[in-house]
Amino acid sequence: MRCPFCGTEDTQVKDSRPAEDGAAIRRRRSCPACQARFTTFERVQLRELTVLKTDGRRMPFEREKLARSIRIALRKRPVDDDRIERTINGIQRRLETEGESEISSKRIGEIVMDTLRDLDQVAYVRFASVYRNFREAKDFSAFLGSLDGAPGAS
Image (cartoon, rainbow, N blue to C red; front, side):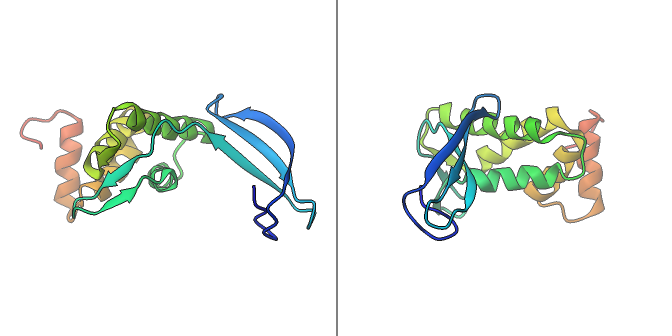
């Protein structure tokens, strides 16, 4: 593992322990060249995923992009970091086990929305407002009406 501070390629593992409920390994490392210490995480990756964007482009799946959007939706909500990490891991694992190495961005968005609906309703609405591109207050109103099961709501 390359040192993020000085770029030396040979770093030493000082401590390893399970993290994220056993879904990852947290390693404390040190660099013999600059004496810096840093942490790395190892996660199982079942397959390489490619995201098919709505405009037809293909991009490699980026766990950090998924995590960032979920964390934004959950900002200032009463959901602890461990639960957020488990949620992100669960979504990634679900994507990897669906059997396809290429997955549409729309499918990823739907999975995130399904997950957030069960996790936190406010985060669900926040994510939906961006994902479904709400432009006016009536878009929120119609969406919130559909949460309540109101007749005529879409």
